[in-house]
Image (cartoon, rainbow, N blue to C red):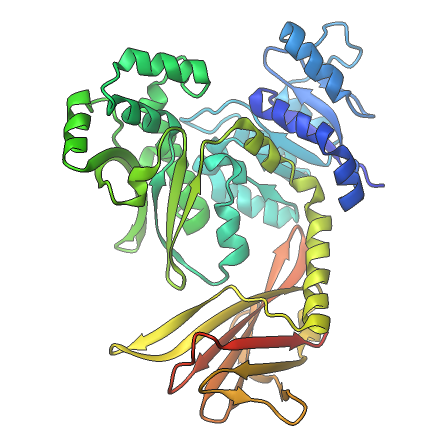
Length: 480
């Protein structure tokens, strides 16, 4: 059984939650993924640092922290190595970067991640600083080295925002992002609307653990700006930084303004936005009045929301309800099983298509010209783990609907790919034309995932001249 070796930099609430998950899910990880991960290094600023080639006893260490607040100074695995030394020198497969956020530079976390990537190590981080300040550089370095770089936990505590786009919205372009991303300010604004004094609100937030001793980075909008930069960098390849986000916090919002807004059916929320203006992605953070009927106004307490607008799938909203630290730890639990999980999912897709003839479909969009529906665009995705030149295969499909019925005596009609040329080294296109009813385009995109080539096939079906019924079913069988 494979034993991925994990080095953890930073062992606060998120790091400890991650450790507990490794303990609690140990048997399940072994059973499902045939992996038995071990933590070989933990580095902290104030609790001590430990390095053990054969793995650390996480249960023992968590008990020590609960009892004394630090690791046992007499532990034989005590180490004087700091975070960058561990990243650069120790033996591990995965670096989990959880050091405290430095919101004005992203350092030293950026250097920690670069050190690991330069050694061809996989990296996962819950630190939004590197994503807000150096995402493009780190992403490109990971791709060059053929390793994984995961950062889902950096915004909304691991709610699948980045994965939603990268994994389920192929060829969709994100054109706009907006949301409520800072729990402290959302809580403060909500409580002030109840006419509770500010000092009471802040004290309650500290007791509940989400208001910092010094909440200025939250109240002044810096935390929200960093999260906005991270979202725009990943989803829109903005190449921006927090200092370029137009920022205004809630420091000047008074209780009277909040109460007045409520009396007019409004709510004041600290909104994060990003959109394309004059060809450039621009971001902003500012308090705004939101109508009580808007989804954004219903986000209460420590909950968050992000609204993503795309060219093909319209607008999607993702709400995270009252997060806890366990969610962050859960997301950090992903990387050491990723490659095995990816392989399993690819094999499963092929098996389902061949033996069960089920549809893998992402969605559908009506094509409208001059206020007339002229067709429907369906888009599918299939991961196929084999060389691109071997994918010149046969697609068998059946269309059922009130305006299309393409079947032969056996219930299927078979077509061969017709090459339409190669659009780029990474994209190849085939198309099938049949009758006067429809046109099918097949795009094959070669991608590097964790250093290994995968082929993603997208099917685009345009029907004309008459749109099909909502009940239409499409069955696609890939002959691998």
